[in-house]
Amino acid sequence: MKRTIILILTALLTLSMQAAKKEKVQQVDSLGRKIKTGWNFGVLPSVAFDADLGFQGGALTNIYYYGDGSQYPEYIHSLYAEAAYTTKNYGIFRVNYDSKYLIPKHRLTLDATYQPDAMCDFYGFNGYQSIYNQSLHKWNKNPEKMDIDTYQSRAFYKYKRNLFRFAADIEGTIWKDIKWNAGLGVLGYMIDECDIDMLNGKKNVYDPATDRYAQKAMDKNVEGMYEKYVKWGIIDKNEALGGWHPYLRLGLTYDSRDQRTCPTKGIYADAFFTYTAAFGEQATVDHNYNHLQFNFNFRHYVPVYRDRVTFAYRIGTQNNIAGKSPFYMNTYLNTLFIQRVMYEGLGGANSLRGIMRNRILANGFAYANVELRCKVVTFDIGRQHFYIGLAPFFDLGIITQPYELPEQQILDNYNKDTDPLKLPLDNYFAMKDGNFDHSRVYMPHMAAGLGLKAAMNENFVLSVDWAMALNKQDNAKWANFYIKMGYLF
Image (cartoon, rainbow, N blue to C red):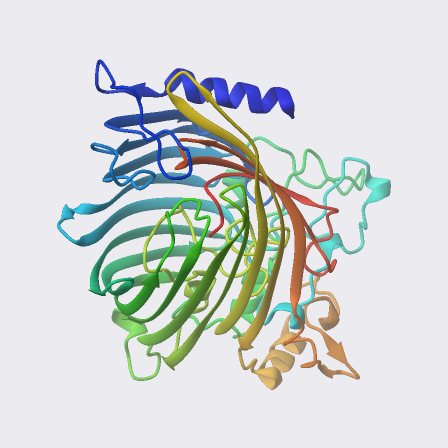
């Protein structure tokens, strides 16, 4: 791990360039940090790992402009671009611009992103009310360690989801730290069942003669959880293939943080409404997916020891207050400013670390994240400022608005289903005495872990997080591992 950190810092230093040919002797701020001025270019291979998405390869760059440094560590302009793909067929193609100075006294953020995802996670509705059965998708090269009678496919808890997003967000000042916010954009979801032929490639499928699964191959005739939800009528046919949704967002923000990337003190709070429209069949009287959602977020950064140790926590909620939101949009955590590639809610590296991605899927949810951020080592290499930090954390999520499952319809369609691989209903839903068990819906989902941070010039932060779910229904693995850019919040 130590060698990895040294290599990362060396790459950061080597690829970081100053646009100005000469730089005056650096001044320091009130905390003793050397002030950056002018342009700063951070260029890196986009090499990362996510337990849900696999190993990532590509390239990214983040260009900062600090001007005369009077506002450091805040930047005047930030331009971020990334193109990458993972071993689990997840792509990132993104350009993001952020500035508080392009429009005087206003913050403007523009984001354009395309994310193809050949195996997006789908574990059913209402968290623990949907049973996660690892043996349904757990493949092992040793057939003696597999549950052959239960195993379905590695893609059982997957579906195809390609997402296009464009967002334009602006913020202005009402009074001191109180801001107004407005934004508009469009989300385009193109979803379907997994393309098994593409995923298999030249792999062989299950051989009944040897009773073995060759090379992790998948049988395209095996239905996954997503297909069953469509077949049993839980997912309406008008939302089964996705749709295009323009949206308008309005809200208020209170922000007294000392900086945006890694605050050491202050409060950030926002409350906002998002109205999302629909087109075509999704906007008819019978199937109206126009809807209004409300979000509230509160983040607090408490200095424990100067800027070296900070206690940080975040609480938030997202709820549907009017209309019907299609299931695929309930995997998206609304935000006033796009700062990371994806906002999954809830479960995964961007919300509840250690818990499987999109494990908690409901109309409304609440969450909390707690971290103790410690800058263990700070040092300079040339004109670049670095620190190495540790951050133990705890994440929690709960459902506030569950789906009302059409229970009788599910039972009727399940009984009519002639799929020879169909398993007893309690493999898909929590059941009690032959009925759906509602007592599990509001049980909290919890995880804990430790983060390692390597930062350059306060704004360019590489995060390595190790996290473990506290309930095997949230993740049967002992732990998950993530390598990402930036802090979670």
